[in-house]
Length: 291
Image (cartoon, rainbow, N blue to C red; front, side, top):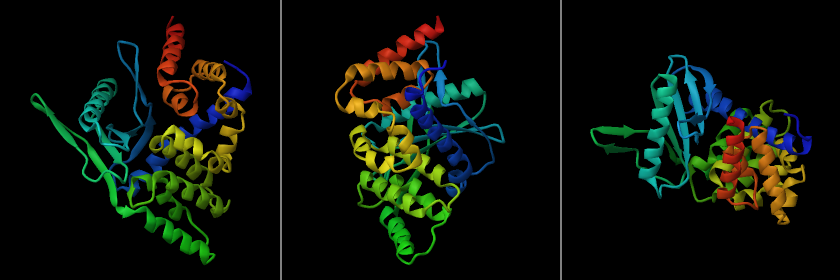
């Protein structure tokens, strides 16, 4: 469906950022974390079941041996048992749909040191693979990069890779400040790094995973200075919402859902409207498509 470019282009950019994020995990971060196996292709992250609801996983990757690796992000362990039950549900549907073994890796933010990684229900024990980078300090990453910049030593792609996973690391730097520093460094790295746009897209997507909407909004100026951010924020939609025009928020959300933008992306992109209202709009649009 061809709607006006003012609502379509920015959110195409956000969907593209998610796609880049998935490819980045497959090509860069699996080897970085020494996760065994050869990637075949990235899998869809929506699972539809009989009640016609969608469950959204963060990242799914098909491996050459036929198995599937599923990633989830966790920035809080306040509902650890409920989260594990949810992950087990994801695995069950993915296993049933793809008829293969599923391995779930959970990426815990640096503030979580001893996460719950398994639970027993009846005769079954469910386990996830935790990725905990508490021992690697974000301060060390920024100090190393800043030292190179001060000495006018050109940054490489390998220097920037740790920036994309800085929210997973330990240290005392608040999450919002980590992203502020990371976006600033990426800008300073210059266009000599071929994968710069990829790094920007991954940083933006990670920010949507680990920051609150309020924190993400406060980073608007930093993000706008990237190529992706310029596309996302220069459409006038965010400015209108910030002025309290709730009707515009409703219409924007409706148009995005009609154009197939995922529920998760819309929730992270639209402010001035509650998540419950967004859910009702989404279910209304989905019901019309099914009919």
